[in-house]
Length: 261
Image 1 (spheres, rainbow, N blue to C red):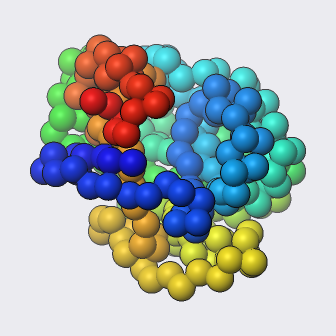
Image 2: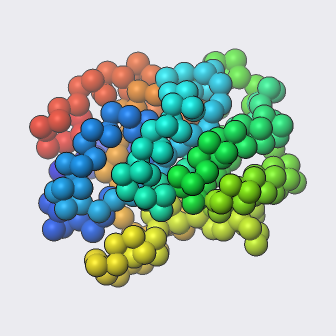
C-alpha cells in the first residue's frame, strides 16, 4: 500500500501482507461499519487492537460522530469479539469552552465510564491543542474556547481518575506528562508492552519513537491521511474542512493501491 507524507507529500510504500505486519493499532470514533469485517481481518492472520474515541461532547463540536450511547454499544461488541484488553477507550481531546468545563466533563465521563464498565481496562485522555488552523475553525464556528490552567487540568484529571478506578479502569495521559501521578500513567498509544501481552506468540523487538513532544509510542508506520475523515469535528487538526474531507472520503477506492488517488 502507498500513502503520502501529510507534510511533504512524498509517497511511501509499506507491505500489508500479514507476514510483514506484526500488528495493527486502529483509531476511530465509529467502528460500526468496521464490525462486519472483523472476522475476515482476523482470519487473514492480522493481530490488532483498538483505540475508540468516545467523548459525548455536543454536536457543535462533533457534528457527525455517533451518539455516545451508540458508540458504547459498538465498543462492547468489539470487546465481546476480542477482549477488554484489546479495546482502549479514548476520552479526548478535552476542550474547555464557555459552556463546557469541569462539571460537564466529570458528569459525562462518569456516564460513559459506567456504561463501559467491564468492556475496557484503559482510558486515554488529552487536552485540546490549539494549532492556528484549529483556532481559526473554532472562531469561525462561534465557539469561545480557552486553554485551562495546569491547576484546573490537575483537578479535573484527579476527578476522572477517581471515576476510572471506580469502574475498573486505569487512566493514561497522552502527551500530558505534567498530569502523570500514581493513579495516572503515561500513555503509550502504540504500546510495545501491550502488544507483547496480547500476542506473546509473536515476540516484538520494539523501540520508543515518539511522534511529538511527550509522546510515548513505539516505532510504527502511520498510514492514515489528512482530509479523509467525514466526522467534521471542529477541533480537528487533520482536516482543512468538512466538505473537502467528505469528497476525498467518497473518492476512496477499496481496490486501489493508495488511500485516496
